Structure formats: structure tokens, C-alpha cells
View 1 (cartoon, rainbow, N blue to C red):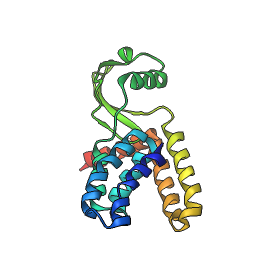
View 2 (cartoon, rainbow, N blue to C red):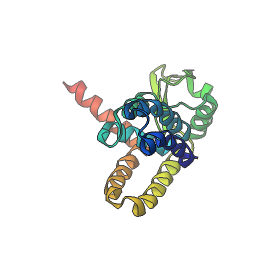
View 3 (tube, rainbow, N blue to C red):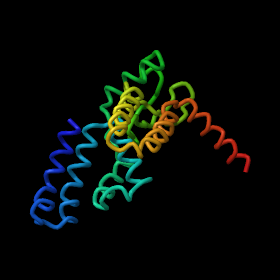
Length: 193
């Protein structure tokens, strides 16, 4: 599916490169939205890769593409609340209503592998952020990266170290407990003054 989408985007460049027709910047601008839509539809590692390339390696892509893909850093596609409820209830072993006095169904934010919801804990009345990883998110992203690595091994071996580094960075994003510990440590440090 991704390859077919890229092929359609690539075909938009054919008149320019084959016959010298069409302004290249205009073609970049016209295809940028198609690329963003394709990446959003593919989700997972595709969104994560687009976020990384647009922010860490913007010189690899046309400026119009980078501008569209940068949007994904702050506006990744969210999943329906039914998915969130199922994940939260499986993790907590009880219903969302039993655990929380309030739970906003619309996420505060979404990323490539999960999203964050505002909630109020029933027992303590404390307002919290509930970070929910999408089902299969870890396996999907790591599997996609494994496939990308296989292709690059033949097509562009020079990029293998970058993919390996990216995979290591991404692995750290799958443990929300470690992330919470770091956030608690930062909060304690700031509270001490």
C-alpha cells in the first residue's frame, strides 16, 4: 500500500523529468499533501519516520514535504476511544469508570504509537495524564523498521547506521513506566528548587 502511494506521488514528477514540463517547486507542493495523507493512513513507523526525517534530517526532502510532515510532530492521528478504553481496562484490570471519576474521550494529544488523555483518579481526585500505547504499536513499528532495513540493505546501505540509531531511539519510547520515572525525577528536582 505504501509503495503504491509513493508510486502515485512519483508519477506526478514524470512530466517534469521526462519532458521538462511543470515547475519542480509546484510539483513538490502538490505532492506534499498526498505524502502527508499517505503517512497518516499508514500510521506506526511511517508516522515516526516522517517525524524524524522532517525534524532531524530536513535536507533529505523537498522543503514543501518537510513543511507538511512537520505537522505530524504535533498532530499525529488519534485512535477511537473504544481502543483507548480497551487498552486501559486491560492494563488496570477494571473499567475506566471504576478507576477514574472523569476520563476525557478526546485525547489531549496523539503520537505515532499512542495518545494522551486527561483523567481524574476516582480514589484521590487527582488530575492525571493517561498515556495509552496503541495495541500492537511496538511490534508494528519495530516490524516496519526491520522491513525498511531489509530494503535499504540493497538499495541504500549507507543509511543503515541511521536506521539502526533510529530503531534504538524508538525502543526507548515503548516503556511508559521508565518515562514516568524520569518525569517524577524531573518534577522532584524542580520542586527542590
